[in-house]
Length: 243
Length: 243
DNA sequence: TAGATTGTTAATCGATTAACAATC
DNA sequence: TAGATTGTTAATCGATTAACAATC
Image (tube, rainbow over all chains, first blue to last red; front, top):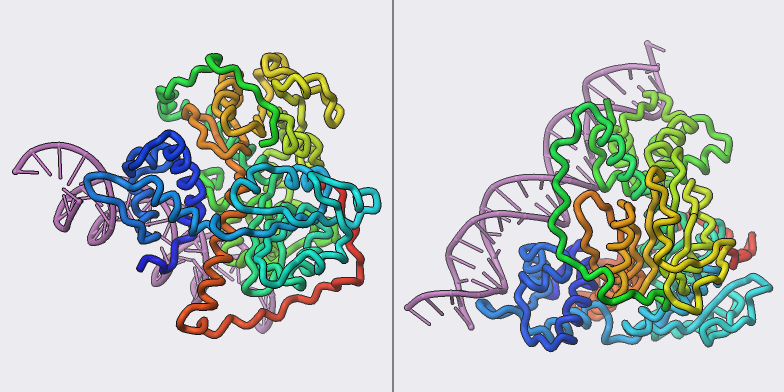
């Protein structure tokens, strides 16, 4: 059947595969080999094939995978078929940015509510939605409709707000506050911790630095790999739109 | 000695431990047991002790860990001792939010440059810093000073901008663009993919939903754990400040 | 058929976990 | 000394990887 348990590590890679597949579809490719798809997604082809095998998706030996079929299948698994509601709590700097993030809508996530308790923010209209007080949470959450709660509040308030989301029926939470959230079984929490990311980079940078000064002059630095050439100036980057 | 390789999974948890330790320190605790610290960090105590053993940090049997000493040691490993420069490229919604993020400064990360090529944005002052054109990258990056590059540009521009950062000497990159970046060996990239996070939540939510409707009526739903009570209304959350 | 490429097997690696001897 | 708690061992689990038989 294939609908059996998909390993967590595999799930985390599905969005990447989906994106790579969309790129192939846009480029007009009908089929793609595990080799090519893996390359585009930045993983090894063995890993890709193993991952896809968990989905029960079948390619064709000697040919590869049907781009459109595989794309649709993964999109389906990632909920792209369903319409998900998203509520964002905490409309500070980050909440603002998230409310306006284009990448959500394009993947089937619809921001339906913005909440905050700061008197200066409530009532303000952000990305077309009014910021409402937290009390009105219940008025926005529809029992039948799957809703994801996004927490962009300060750490001190995160647990309290999370409890209110859960009480209102939210069972999926994306937490940007640097705190451990306690939730009842059945509620799924993912955490994005911006400062931690920098700290982890700093850890490795420091390790690189001390290695460089260490007794043994580094075991033959793995020679700056011959990087696939990228036309640095051919297309002048015009940055600045919403990510 | 203990300075040997720290497993990646351990590194990723160090920021959490550091935060928990700071909380204990603030609360005036002098020592803390692995049990208590693990609880606060949301992990098992065996895992915590194993992690700390990789640091070569020594607690005292029968007593626990010296809060201040352990805090300082982990902070040191995570680069809190060094002052890190951060440049942010792409001052859209997200770049704005990152430029104003308080959690960076408080952990020793100093935002020293904001870059963008959009004529509407260049020159604007964001969080006290002028937005500069990408050409001026070299003027801000000091060869001696460790610098982390943060990419908040649209996917199409990410690789190009990354190449320029690397060419300018950046060896640590935090990438918010939903693309795979190719970098030469020795350059460290971490990725934060906001839409993917929602997709992963959606995957699990969908799985929960189909399980619920499945033939076997779910193997005795693991009874909503007796949640440590949180005074939902005792302290009325005042949300809204910058996360 | 010959060439290509999948899906799966088996080996390996890394991370988690429980248990406990060492020791404060 | 008795109680507490670490650091480490060994077992287990999950994820990665290479190799290849199956098969288009």
